[in-house]
Image (tube, rainbow, N blue to C red; front, side, top):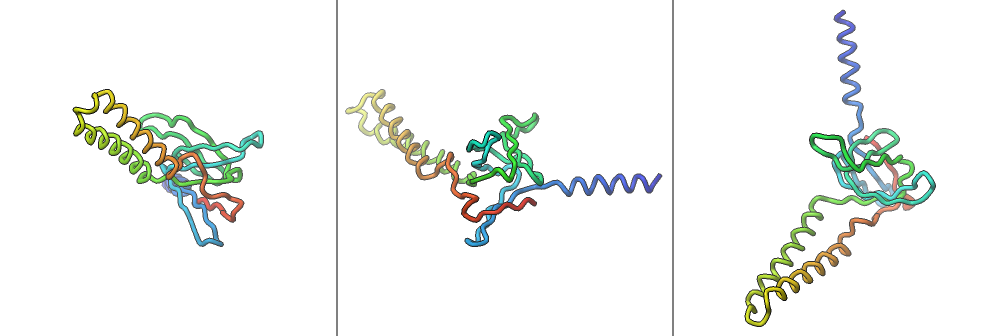
Length: 168
């Protein structure tokens, strides 16, 4: 009986530690590697089932030997907007860091509020509606500029350029 329990616990332990926790894209020619762990945000370009190219942006939920599950993870419920992508179908990728998202948001809000408070000095020349409209326009221009500088919907690396995939 003890032997069966020990074998059962050993089997469960092996199963827990054998689950894949991440994926690494590496390019031996350039000497670069880009790791993605569970929870990392990724933009992935892949070939769909009808041989069409698709682009999808979200967080990595799960990785196994042949597929990557990407979607919006939730704390107390099942993930939403989930796509299962075969690793061999991936044609391009980009890593989106939390820092770049935070920087874009901070700069946009800062430019909008800064423009509004800067225009408050000219309160006698501008109405409050004009102040709000001008600061909103400056915020939108900042947001558009930052989206051009830090694109979210564009791959940076292509698999045809020598990138390989390693699942760990």
